[in-house]
Image (cartoon, rainbow, N blue to C red):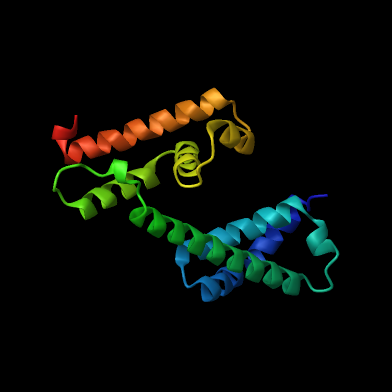
Length: 171
C-alpha cells in the first residue's frame, strides 16, 4: 500500500537534500544524482512497505539511494560503452564510397542515431548489430513485425537524410 501524501511530503522535506548530496557523492554527476533522487521518491511512493517495515527510516532511505546510484552508474556506463562501440562499428555500407572524411561521417551517423526516437534506435540496433530478424525483434518488443519493419525503415531514412546533408552527391 502506498504511503500517504503527508508521509511522502515529510520524507521529501526531511531527506531530499541529504539524499541528493549522497547520490552525488556516489555518482559524481549532477544529473545522475537528480535522477536517483527522483527514482527514490517514486519507489517510496509506490511501496509504502519499504519505510513501514524498516527499523530505521533514514537507514533504508540511504540504502535505497546507494543501490539506485550504483544502478544509475552501471546504466550510464553501459550506455556510454554502447555509444562508443557504435561510433566504431558502423556497418561499412553506411560509410560513403568516396574518399571523404570517414570519421566525420561516423560522428554524424552516431549523433543522428542517438537522436532517433528510442523505438527506431532500438530496432536498428537489434537488427544491425545483434542480427535479430524483424520477427524476433517484434516478439522481444511486443510489436507486430510490420511495425518493426516500419520503425527500421523510418530510422534508416533519417540516417540517410543526415548522410545526404554531409555528402549530397550520394543521392
